[in-house]
Every structure is written in structure tokens, then in C-alpha cells.
Image 1 (cartoon, helix red, strand yellow):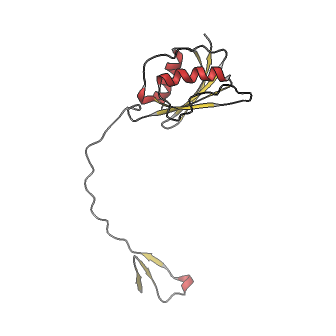
Image 2: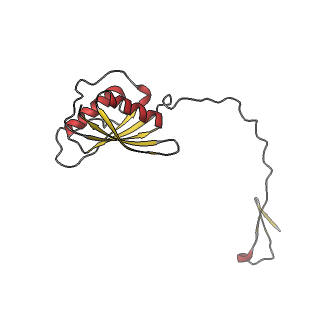
Length: 159
């Protein structure tokens, strides 16, 4: 037998028929597991919620995004709507839920319905919905939950 590292090969077999035998190495002793652990709330770790707006005018999107970004900082830098859009558009923002600031945007009136999708940790998506409900009528349009994330769809309507 020939020793090749951790593998032994028999010399008698043809090269295609050589049988590999893996030599089991003894595992080094592991240190005992740490008894310390940290538990944080879903919002203390810099959690974010991705929000998309669709089926609305640029003015309505700007109004909703201004409201949200006045409350939660926008990590993506996309939380503004362009002046004019002549084709279907989706606006997105990644909101930093851990840095919530109280307050309301100056103009929170929308002219028509706005479709909103919020995706993130369930508690954080609920906080975004609650913030929207302060200024708009929020109709739930559906929700899908995963292991540690939820995607919720809302329709905002003018009050």
C-alpha cells in the first residue's frame, strides 16, 4: 500500500480500479461552548424594510415616500420620485427601521390609490404599516410570511 496524505491506494489494482480509503483523522478536542449569548429585538440590529410603490402618479409616490423617509431613513437613496412619469413605474426605498424619528411629512395628501408592498421582518413591516396608517387609509391586500420575513401588500387611499 502507498500512503498519499490522508488517502491510501492499493498498488495491485489497475489505475482505473484503485480503491480509495480515507483515513479518519482524530478530531482535535473542542473548547466547551460559550455560555454567553445575546438576544436582540428585530429592530436593534439595523433592520430594514424594502418598500415598493406602484399603480400611482409620481406626485402620489413622492408624497408617500416623503412621509416614509421623514419617519425612517432611506438606506438606498432611491426614496424620491421623479417629477414626471409617462409610463408605468415602480418606486422603491429601503427604510432603516431601527432609526425611527417621530414626525409627519408636511404634505401627506394623495390624489388616488397607491399600491404598497413592504418586505422585511414581521414586526418591522407592522411598524411601516402603522406609520402609513397615521396619514392614509390603509387597506390590507394580502400577506405572505416566510421563516423570518413577511411581505405585505397594502393599498393606500385618500382620506
